[in-house]
Length: 51
Image (cartoon, rainbow, N blue to C red; front, side, top):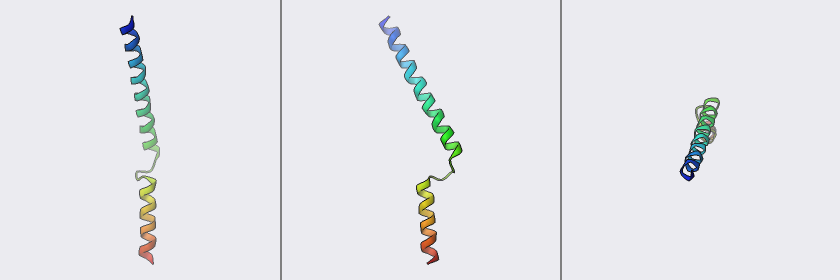
């Protein structure tokens, strides 16, 4: 019975990890390809080049 409880807990953890991965995938889908920090860096570098 104890072993069964451990298995159930492990399964719950795995489900949570899978859910988290799915959420991350969805976020990555909706996000622009470049991270915001990178986009800001390119913007600021373009501004300095114009000057």
